[in-house]
Length: 501
Ligand code: C2O
Ligand code: CU
Ligand code: CU
Image 1: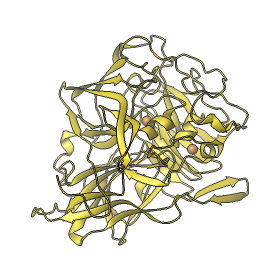
Image 2: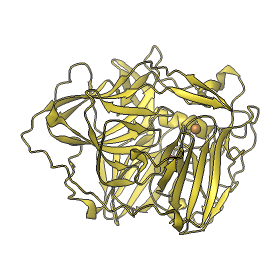
Image 3: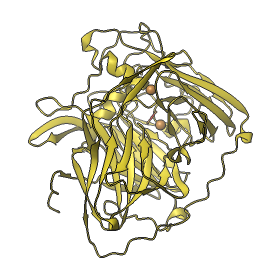
Image 4: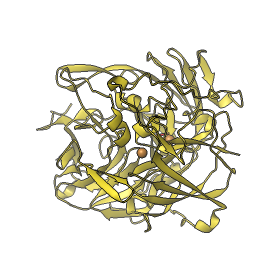
């Protein structure tokens, strides 16, 4: 192995597992010992014995089987965030797997090349579970999009960066116990990690390098730039490539979002930086600005360029054809207002789902078997840092907190709609399962560069209009959901369900 770079930790690269052509792979959710701070191993979670998960690569059109096993001591499940599949394969609204149980997903990816991800999605504990490490990359590769001239050697010039923020206790263990304030505004940690390490430094060849950025943080939005302020190319958003590279000097990446960029290290070294996430909270005409727990620009990832005597790839002019987003194709409009509810309403508790007690189930074969119908009872909160005894904020969409078993919207299969998303008090990253949408406009203007391609999650500062086509079926027993991807908000009820039929 290469010696550790000065001032930092060598960036670990998650294993890339291609599950192609009838291949099968297993990811086992379980505990892992991981030292975030030198010589202070902490027990966290992840897959296959490690903190965080391997990168799973699916090839478009090829059937792949992914088995998930639960080796944790609590229920878990896995959601394929950004994957365009029927809701029975979506993973989020199926009953979670009890400890010891497993489930099999037979998936044939049918979408463009994209950097997606997977993570645990048990309502009420998504924040804790993703923070704990139950997340990994899911990469779709379209054979027709190979050969676009992009760097593509995994871990060498095609480098995944999973970004999270944490706080640690004196023993070096991450602390996740959001109080009422952190639920209302989202949890922000003081230390930023990439692929599970602090002060990450990546060895990079002195030529253009592709980075697949994933914001797997609970609530922190990164405003990313190169320390020397050089331009870099944005080549892909959540759901795939842009028509061509777009040079930018700053990229906003909200929780749940991904982006692919090219940084050219033939121009010398630099660092990937972010500004603090100053949080604006509006109440009617007044707005207050809450400072970040990190008070100055910080390094997300350092780079240590070396020469490998290989020529750099030429910047491609064009990548893919992305049809224009045409609002005239929409057959109806819906409006979703994301807002806090009265603080006394506590309509959820962790573990609302009844965990499955059988050892295996084949989601692909489940059909209408009546799973996922458990109705949430207004119970007192049992987990997730309820230690301060303070009333818990509840959050909702259109005045309602999430309720298991209630269907909020019914959408026609194959139709296109305009969804208007309104963030009343603060910016929320809005995510829709089962689709890749286009942003028609935001805050009264055109979409920002990083929202101009295929998206499944978009940071809604004030308002946004999304053009969404619904190609996949979802029935009442396992609907799709839409929610805020600030995980504390999702867990506190800022989520709704929809069927597609
Ligand atoms: Cu990445 Cu419903 O989530
Ligand atoms: Cu999702
Ligand atoms: Cu939110």
